[in-house]
Length: 106
Image 1 (tube, rainbow, N blue to C red):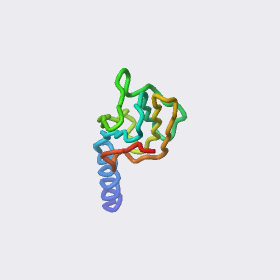
Image 2: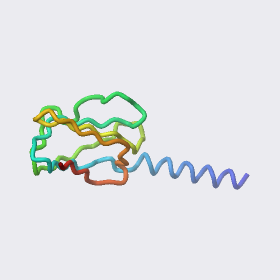
Image 3: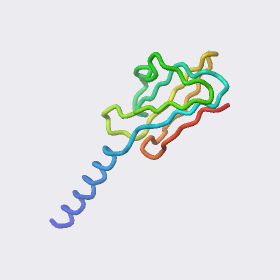
Image 4: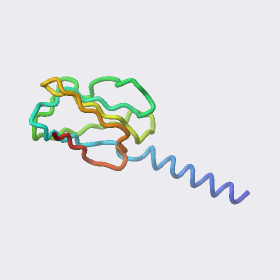
C-alpha cells in the first residue's frame, strides 16, 4: 500500500507541475516582414482556434509576449505565423513549458 501512495504522490506532483508550468512565450520576429496573425493549438487538434494577436502585429525586430495557456494543461503546441506578404510558417510540437522565446527568421 505504501508503494501505491508514493507512486500516486509522484504522479500527482508531476501533474500539478505541468499545470503550474509557465506557458508565456516571447514571439520574436526576425524575418524582415510584419507578422500579422499568430495561432497556437494543442498538438492533439487540427483546429487553429483564433488569431492570438487580434488587431496587434509583430513588426520585424519586435518581440511580443503571448500567454499560450488555453486551460488544457498541455505543454506541446503547434505554431502558425502568417506574414504581411502572405507567407505562412508553421512549427509543430513546441514545448511551451520549456522555452521562453521562439524566434521566427528566414
